[in-house]
Image (cartoon, rainbow, N blue to C red; front, side, top):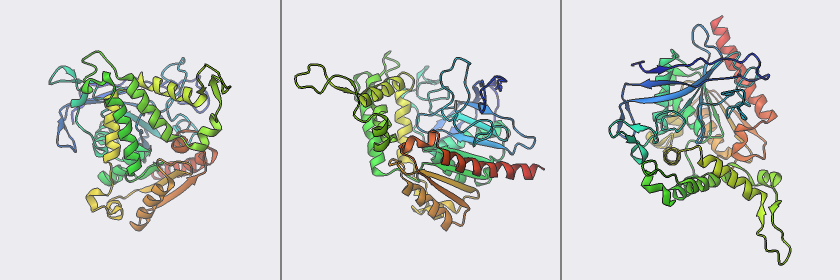
Amino acid sequence: MSTEKVSSPATARDSAAEPGSVGIVAPQSHTFTEPLELACGRTLPEYTLVYETYGELNADKSNAVLICHALSGHHHAAGRHSPDDKRPGWWDNYIGPGKPIDTDRFFVVSLNNLGGCHGSTGPASINPDTGRAWGPDFPMLRVRDWVHSQARLADVLGIQQWAAVVGGSLGGMQAMRWSLEYPERLRHSVVIASAMKLSAQNIAFNETARQAITSDPDFCDGRYLEQGKLPRRGLAVARMIGHITYLSDDGLGKKFGRELRSGSFSLGAEEAVEFEVQSYLRYQGDSFSGSFDPNTYILMTRALDYFDLAREYDHDPVAAFSHARCKFLLVAFTSDWRFAPDRSREIADALMHANLPVSYAEIESPMGHDAFLLKNERYQRVFATYMQGVAAEVEREVN
């Protein structure tokens, strides 16, 4: 594999960082010039992946952990890019010194997937054949394409085997696919709030979100960048639809109830009633639409829809997992109705019938699907205990 066109600014631990933080971090990038054959039958002749690393790689490169992100995620999983950052990385609750993914013991790699819009090659990147943004012409991707590109990044970093591949939601699908595509290249697969395939209801939510984007007059058949436009309204509505499904009825009720932001229920009141939850969703939609590429959102949701771990194994998940060689941790959350605990139990049952080591935890939480991102004492204990075992396993072999 070619390793030309490399950009690797240093990633440093800030000595003044708050306890448990990896400190100030810097993205890195690698441009691959070896063509990547995709599941759709097309080939990408060249592409770039952006990633971040936390912690130190040990001498035999056996303590590496790969973080696979979900639909709207990216490479910035922990730490801050500058002292002025208002928010740390999206999984900072669980990555850092002394945290479940302990950067004092692990070398952590988090990347922005191919097709993303945070630096990796995707629909907003320039198509070398036309000199214009790829837009809707960017190749359709599958989860296995991400896994293959991640394996190439591991090669660049000199990592022959991951101590663990970890992901929540769509990231969990990648962690499972890793166990089938490269069974000898990971020792543990940590699958959080995920499923072996989407339900019809989940596919319906994704299609509704896509329709919100494509029906925006500024979508321009996906060529909005060429027209100097952006379908912000459509993308904002798509995000609002998705965000509702990531939360639970109980969680929304506790956070907002029927509290008013403005207006009055008084008879004859002229001011329109606006609930706090409406304002919250509008803020989420507007914020997202200013930072995410609509074509990427369409691409990612379609990859979610098409994922079916057992399709090529006559829809037999036991046959699929018979190719895996690693150990598994599965975590589900009681109020997650988008990736319900039943889906994780299906994975656990298939793994047990395939005679693979599996640990399963169902965490009580009112926070819905988003619970995998948020602080939760029992979730933290389960996650930390398992990862401590992974670290101890690595350290025993090193010593």
